[in-house]
Image (cartoon, rainbow, N blue to C red; front, side, top):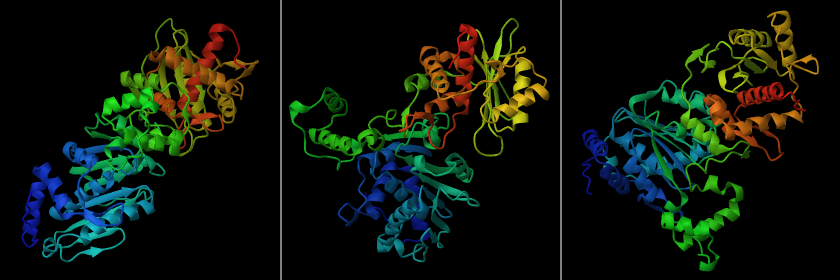
Length: 496
């Protein structure tokens, strides 16, 4: 395809932009015609679309999320397409956000190379005068700019109206990645282009959530397994040494023996992280940093089936699915936290004592006094429910307020003492009750918050089961407490 960009005037650039907007093949051809990259041998060559890049361009929409194996060239391709849109659509602001400063600088070097190696005739007019820095390229002739930011900057993109937003390695963004992403999305223009891409890192966090909820947000999913990269080949194994799993993979995806040779190399070098770094399946590649403690298939299946709560209170902190019914007995279980604006949450679970059905759940940051009042109110609403409070740490203060301030009498006791004591012996058994229920009776659970916490609850290298780094397990522990207390009440036995 031949492009006529004339003398590179504003009018010429706008004409090219119109072709990009209406013709995907034109977008491919223009990128391959005018953009240069540095290849694996260190040479500047034309950006010829590889299979993953071509598939992305064919399927791309206004909102996109890309799950990919390592070094597929997707970041470069998106940067190239957004660069072209920046220079062919006057008044455009493009922002690229990377997970680290080093990554941001590396990506922006690619963008600077795009600019430096443009055809001379294209740079003769409106692109002739350009202001460049390590984080920003400004095109005064068309009033457009291309910026690179780091996700660690909570003010990234603030004050701008972004036309193209590229979020790279979203799974590895530091801090509260969700808050940073939503802040950026708030600045994206209604007709703006969004591309979120990353290799996976755990079945939790912002990237995983965006991937899971893509259909709800009208976001196009793109999955690129490692074998789409033509360079990923190695010496082929002997025919007789092929395993049944390898043969099946070859049949299903038309893989060649030299690709299986590369796969074996991946497995030797990356061991347990091979599925994460070199994705083969869009579900299996979402590995936690440790092994997920609960049965992931059961959790994922239940997540697909749950419905919204029938009522929400306290700005969404309290969810209710089943209201109290005459003749039913209920249990309220409390996992207290210290309160404040950061750190752990206080979680409260309400169960039907006989059936085990989850009726309500509260998750918010509360002081001990606020926790006591919230728990007592729920217990009274649910027909004078039995109220079980973990007495470790802040729990003692909550129990004191329940007796003295809230005047609530029906409190669960262990060894004639108010509250439940979680110990190194009782904790695994409590979690075991929850794990068994998730497999045997997943319909008991209605909370998306709880199930997502279960999905990121992992067995660490030390052997301890807890929330993956950056995640919470307050709803998990409150539910484990509820099920353990229910077991004691129904069987008369004690969890040690």
